[in-house]
Length: 270
Figure 1 (cartoon, rainbow, N blue to C red):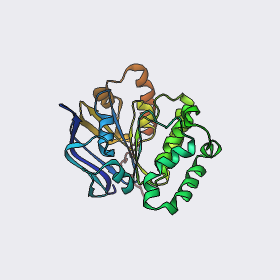
Figure 2: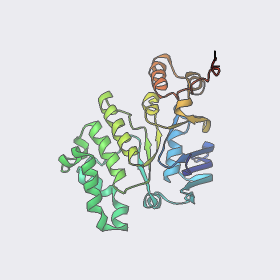
Figure 3: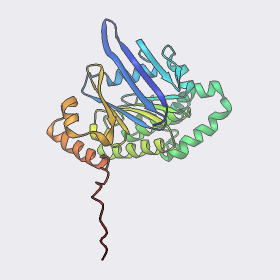
Figure 4: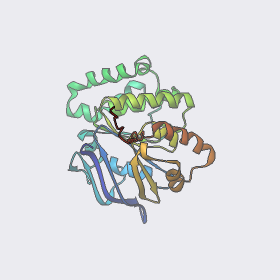
């Protein structure tokens, strides 16, 4: 396995007198998609926000490509190659599509204004619907179109690592499937991702490794192909309806067992 692009090392974090994360450790190899799963209140989104610099770590370290970024603010992390797609998409509804993208490119324009036009064109090439609706107010777009806008806004800075928080939330099944293909296409370009997702089946269809959380700690980590129903049921308490969809996804992602070696055949001679 390749060297981790992102390392979360024994991180604690919280709000006020409340500690939410109790020593979270996760490695994310470059070019992979890591998924963080858990029930409500497990600490999934707080983990992502701590990596993004939105919630400060109280102890532990966050390393990006071996560099300690634990005390860096969000803007410096974006400039270093991190993108963030927040929960609920959070577009600026009274601004146009292009104005949303321009705001997303704030650090790029400060760092190297000459690259902005080419980066904007690259986003429009990847998402033709955004080019078509560049002058439309973001708040008037459909949920799926807003999701594409949020992904484009994160990609415009040409990040190496993208944090994706609950991407399927509030989307229709059709829009969720379209977004899944968008995220797969982005990952195919070599962008590393960390995905937090309440929809387990949706998340498992995307990620390479799964990290299961309970009450602020990671209780299980493994490649998706090595997960089974019992492990998910034990740590996530999946109900029968959701479990059926998840079981089908696990079966489709299961790592094939190596063929069993039979006894060597003895060649008989006359």
